[in-house]
Amino acid sequence: MGARLDLRTRVTFAWLEVTGKCQLQCDHCYADSGPAGSHGAMTTDDWRDSIDQLPALGTKMVQFIGGEPTLHRGLPELVHHALDRGLAVEVFTNLVHVGSELWEVFSRPGVQLATSYYSDGKEQHERITRRRHSYERTRSNLVEAVRRSIPVRVGVIDVADGQRVREAVDQLRGLGVEGEVRVDRLRQVGRGVWDRGPDLGELCGQCGDGRVAIAPDGSVWPCVFSRWLPVGNVREESLADILTGSRMTQTAAALATEFASRPLNPCVPNMCDPQCGPSCSPACRPAGNCTPTGACAPDYS
Image (cartoon, rainbow, N blue to C red; front, side):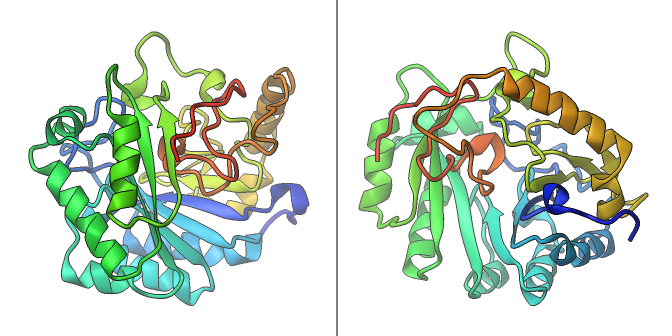
């Protein structure tokens, strides 16, 4: 297994970015994913091997993300595999299309869903997703998840002037979404970048602290936001060796220096919860709505 892990290098939560392919082309996509994306170099066997390594690292939960993870044919098998290894599972999905097999998978104990939402109006929602019929499909599948009593949390992402954010939150509650519904802002990562390159200022301050992200090509990042900071590749070495390797040590030191210069966050003492999804949506827990600089965003819940 290589170097022995200590408490500082344990991973309680892991993002598994199984694909860069997505039906949508949201302008703000943190992963720059879309219809032209691919599943990358990682095979289903590679993903199973990575999942097998996680319990020994202290991992309690994994989140399957993308792209759109439901487009990966191996997702049902991988969710079952993670559950069988004692891991809780969250699937971060746009809920545009969910087949009957996936509904059965999502209904297993230990699985929860997360999704993003933009408006209570079709035109505004689809102007952001750039996909016709995405509004009614996501909305109807949210209703189906509620009907099946599948735990689901939703991040309403505020990306445009005049966006009906408050109304979207109210609509979600009216649809019966009883889980967490939070509001988050645009993050300048991936296609969300509009005035600068990769910036440590867009990171919440918890990168690599008990969490790790694995990309479709096997790259390992401290989190899904810090995509320009690969610290290794699971197709070449074990996660334990990556976490204790020189690249991770150097990156962690650089991040610690950056984060130490920031003021304490008065409203979210522990900053982002490990279960934050891409672009921290659904938004961070426990208090939610954190921004990288520590300011509180409006709470519409």
